[in-house]
Structure formats: structure tokens, C-alpha cells
Length: 263
Ligand SMILES: C[S@@+](CC[C@H](N)C(=O)[O-])C[C@H]1O[C@@H](n2cnc3c(N)ncnc32)[C@H](O)[C@@H]1O
Image (tube, rainbow, N blue to C red; front, side):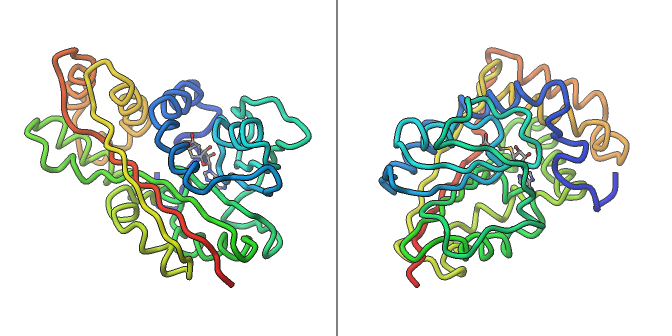
């Protein structure tokens, strides 16, 4: 797989059998933290909101059905979007890297676990800020892998390290440096009243994050093995660890940052 591949072409395509499960588990793990951060922005019923890369659609659904806002959700592939579409919740196929929206249109834009996978991430923050009306807010949330390197568990540190490197080499994701810099990309795009918050998700063998990591590594394992960055045995050892009820280690850190367009 060469560096021209993008998220969703093959890797993490919504047509992969395990993708609905992987994204559903991801939501179960992370929705509470995201919704707490969203609450800081006090969404209002008269707001026009955009969720980029909405996946299974839980965040868009809460904005539409609990806050009563008008929500446009987008994704490259809308087939996993679960909520029923209503007069105030629509989903469209839209590629954030090549398509646009009118400047000054939205009161709130949310992008969760999307920019980390797109090579143009800094430009995309600037692009989405233009779509905000003055006073509107952008909320971005992405993962940092900063605890894996220092794990006392060799297999966990080695295989997960190889996984994050291969993710960068194949589809251009950046789980190492991007979210670790938050909220700098938002400040650099001119946003003000910046907020930031982070959640650390521990990895318990057999638990939610362990299963998400297993499913994520599983899709990339053939590339990792073919480039020699890990062996099949190491992948098997990681999977055994992730299923072991006695295993515990720190896991992913999810960093959310938000800010307001002033002019
Ligand atoms: C890791 S998933 C996160 C899904 C959802 N935001 C969540 O937090 O559960 C990344 C999502 O971004 C979407 N995506 C990837 N590249 C995109 C692009 N260029 N334009 C729009 N959506 C994209 C994927 O199809 C996928 O649904």
C-alpha cells in the first residue's frame, strides 16, 4: 500500500465487515467526553451545525434531537449513519478535502477523529473556520498515542508503536504529533476563547478500548507484517494481551479543543 492511499479507500472503509462494530465501540468509549466538551459551547435550537465525518452519527443526533439544533452531517460514505433523518438532521456524502460550504454559514462545526487521518489537517482547520459565522465555534477532537512508547509491556509498546507508524506511512494519519499540539492549530487559524480538555482511556484486557485497538490493528496487520515492522507472532501476542482480563495499561488520550471565530 503506497502513501497515496487515503482513509476509507480500503483501510477503515465503511464497507469492511468490522467497521460498524469498530465505530460503535469507539462511540461508546468516547461519546461522554465529547458531549461534555460540546456542552461547554451551549448549543442552541436556532444554531446551524455541521458535523464532518459523522460516522455512525451519535454526536449529530444529540445536537439535533437533544439540543434541537439544525444539523448537517457529512461523511465520505454515509452507509453507517444510524439516526433517522428528520427535518433538522440531514446526512450528505461530502469530502472535506475537495468540497466546500459557503463562508460564514455555520454556528458550530464539529470534527471528531477525522482531521488526525487527513494529511491536509492544518489547512482543513483554516478551511472550516471560514465556514463559521462570526461568533460561531469549531470543536475538534483527536487522539494522541503519547503513552504507548513508555509502556512497561514490550509487546504493547512495540506493536502499537509499529501500528501508529504504519498508519502514518500508509494513509497519512498523525496520532503522534497532531492532537498533542492542541489547541495550537485552532489558535493559528485565528480562533479565540479557546478551550481544551483531554480524556485518558485506559486499556483493560477484554475491555472497550482493547477491542477497538484489536479491530484497528487487524486491518493494518498485513501491511505491518509485509514491511517487516512486526511479525505474525507479535500480532498474535498483542491480541492475546488485549483479550487477557489481567492486562491493564494506559491507552489513548483523546484531546478536544474548541474556539470561536471573532471576525
Ligand atoms: C474514525 S471515524 C470517526 C467517526 C465519527 N466522527 C466518530 O467520532 O465516531 C472517521 C470518519 O471520518 C470520515 N472521513 C474520512 N475522510 C473524510 C473526508 N475526506 N471527508 C469526510 N469524511 C471523512 C470517515 O468515513 C469516518 O466516518
